Image (cartoon, rainbow, N blue to C red; front, side, top):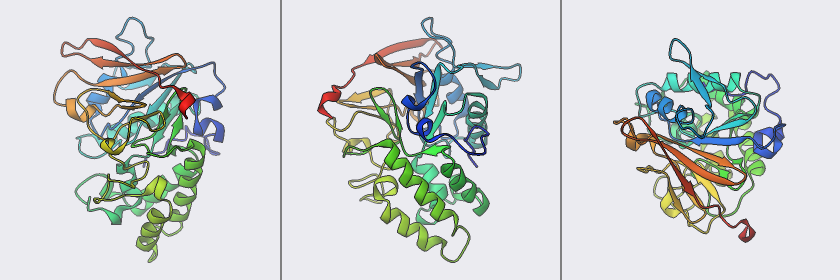
Length: 309
């Protein structure tokens, strides 16, 4: 269940786990998208947008069977910003795609942040998601996800050049490495009790103890006080730390002050247009979005003044 440590038995090195600065590469571009939610065809449309725009080299290419493979070398990083599963028709296909790209890319060049639906696998008994993929995972799969977090395959946050990537973000400033260490501690503690009589009580305690990473917040999730996997975009002020988030559905990527929300797959999954990726370099941030005629449209975003943080 979501094995994303690129086949490395020792896991992703800590520096590479936490941010682009830890990679042994010369300023690779960061390509990101979020909330794939089992919509495999839409994920494919988004990921192939780079190669269909004249100014961008492709990140992936399809083989004769239509499966996407990594061609970004060490010049690209892919951040899948949470919520791979639930809602859509092909959860297994999305997981297989991301796992394949993680195996084929250089270690640390495919990063996945913890979304609230991956959270739902870990803390299955705290939400009523039995009808969804996340709520149907076995104890063995839950334990496997804990172990993948321990190896750095799944993180709470990832530091880019001008933005931090997190599924839902936080109001207060935070450091990706610190949050990732906290997530590892919580996951490895949960792993020891999965499937035991202490499982449910441990889930409740960890969510309360690690609120910044795992907290649900008010209003049954998404409200004030929610952690980095749960906070709704409406509660994230534009003056917050510069962040690229998903979680809250949008028709197109939007910027609110220092914060950009990229969750557009679900709102556009019924059509041929609207699927998008963001591309960050040290100099800028742009979106590449599919148009209704299967073309690609480029838009630019403002880079926050980091002197305020």
